[in-house]
Length: 388
Image (tube, rainbow, N blue to C red; front, top):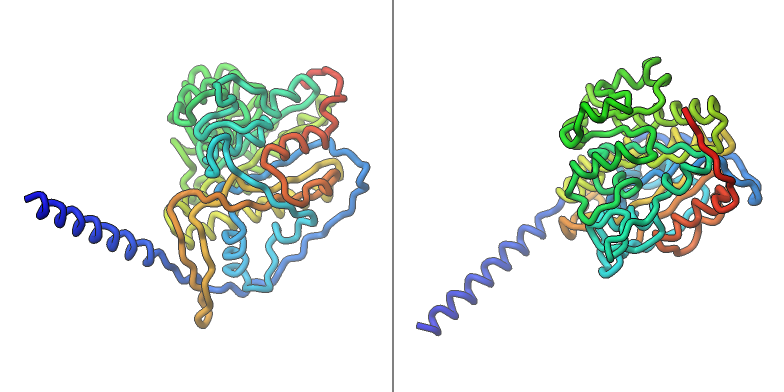
């Protein structure tokens, strides 16, 4: 009887393995090769000694080098150049968390926001659960205003790491409450279901329609909370994309900075759903999400060129999906996914504007935090308040 049970167990294990192996081997897609022509973006030069006034940090959640490569091919073929490809300074970032070579978005975003390594799922707290100040918190008393944009809920891991101090990224109602008490003056994303709306409206202009991003009330408001979906923002013509929200955020932050003689602004904008499509092993949707992300980068590059006082940094929190680009057949490219989870593959760090030259070589994601603070001479800024 024992022998029979053992044979049944072994047979079941082999069948399970074969099913898993065959499913994994079928995670293949064919993506059409695009035929667009490269749109060259004007690039300005900046003196190495020049310090930026403003910081734009754009994060592509789950965006590894192969997500970029596939998006490039899908847009215009192997010789096409995306906006991200035209950013003049490029480095590589390691992404491991405090106690694991694997990171989730919470630990990785915490590294960039606070400069410390922490455990996966933790937000802006040490491995011992002690709160650590974030960039917006550190510069709010030095004449800076801050804003956040995400195509996920604004309470999701990456944006939350810049204002929330908590031991679980999944406590989103508590995270939402912490946002209302934080120095973040502009928040645009999803997450309506997590907020106490009555409390939110006590201190914020609450907007839920993307058309409000172009209104006078938006520009006149001293503090804005834009919530455009119950959770993550479903992509549709009636919902704002990352490009629209980021452009509106830059308009608002620039106006408030100038009106109130602020020292500058900090904006973090996340293309959240590149990661979600990669988790689903859905390359076609990933390319759509990346297009919005890259258009956002192009707009931000134009802003840097015109403004001349802004440093743009583009990176990812981690790679998702283990995407591989295998071969070409006629006008299609064959891709295969290695996993439905995050990987420990290093990600790119791209920079443009005054201070961009230091974002090269191999760095750790915690270094991004200190590079940003050093770029604006945060330690030398005198205490001041930028009031709206």
